[in-house]
Amino acid sequence: MFSDYWQFLDSSLTSISNGFIDVAYSLLRRPLKDDLLILESILANYNDFIYKFSSKNSAELLAIDRLRPEEKILIIEKAVNKIELKTFDAKTIYEFRYSKSNAIGFENKWQPASHLFTLCKGYKTEDGSINIAGPSINDENSDYKYYYSILPNILFYSFQVVTSIYKEIFEKEYNVPEMVIERIIEGITIINNTIYPEYKPYDEFNKNYIFKCKYCSEEVKYKKNIEKQILTSATFKCSNQHINDFFETD
Ligand SMILES: [Zn+2]
Image (cartoon, helix red, strand yellow):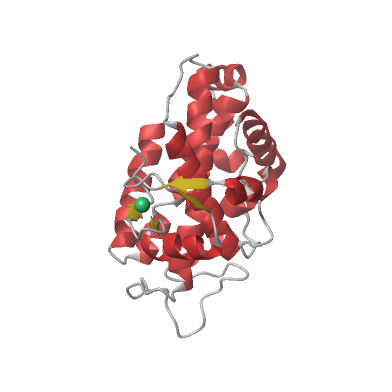
């Protein structure tokens, strides 16, 4: 299941880096709407999932489209309660992936990216127009910014759903170096600071975070100028002007 999720995700990430925004968005539909909900169902209630999966009418019982919104939210809520580092609450995670009436949802992008003509309320194709795949990206493109701000949050959440399944159901540790997790949280916090300044689940973590220069071991405290540098170049500098790669965690 995770392999299916990852194949779509990986192709989506490749597409966006090539500037194919609509293709990149289209490829997120299945992993975020279907695969992730199955993974969440497994984490939420493994026995219930196995029971449904072994039933004669398993397709009917597990088809995502057959679940009512409140049933989906309940599954997500149970999964959220089992992960260690919270991102968004269950309702917000639901809205990102399923809500057709919410401005922050992926449906805003999926509808025009998946259909040449849409009649759906809020995304209706203008008369005399057609939803052709968009032009190449630039920094000011809001679709591009949206992709790179929301997706890291969802990926971090998905990663925790999978590691929690490992831990809870298969009783196996999925060891990830602590520093990798710290940098992911730090990265997500920096993104959210610019996109959702009112939403700060890791604000304290952020304020107290210390970067260590790998060349001179100087401790660099998190500050606005460091945040800006990480956002624009994925690096941070110590006072001796050594440039450290933000993602290098060895
Ligand atoms: Zn240094």
